[in-house]
Image 1 (cartoon, rainbow, N blue to C red):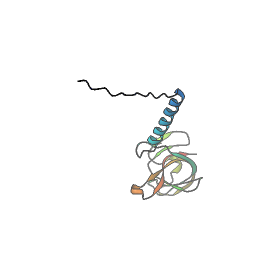
Image 2 (cartoon, rainbow, N blue to C red; image 1 turned 45 degrees about the horizontal axis):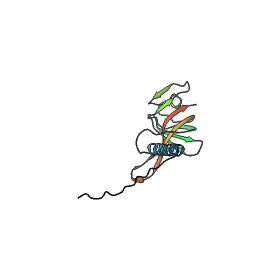
Image 3 (cartoon, rainbow, N blue to C red; image 1 turned 90 degrees about the horizontal axis):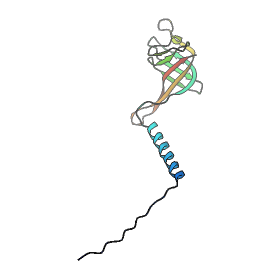
Length: 133
């Protein structure tokens, strides 16, 4: 005895090439957005002009930016001096005082980013790069 076969229908979906290309662009943009906002990997700095103040001989201090607000200036960052030489770590020449004298009002360009604290307990900006002007 032979059983009757069920009829199957295949349906083909056709996509116009322009619509397919648009979908690829949308998927690529969404992927780039997600990858850029992941909580790990390198981050792009925000740049602003302002004045730097260093407190104490350890070299930490703050930068007051033109947009308003103060940004934490750690003592060990990458920086560019007035001649264009890049150095990683230490204190920029333009921010060196005698001994542990406070140096302030030095014109700089600062690259900074916002650091999020664990468990959503706030955030603050911190300088990651500095250029003496």
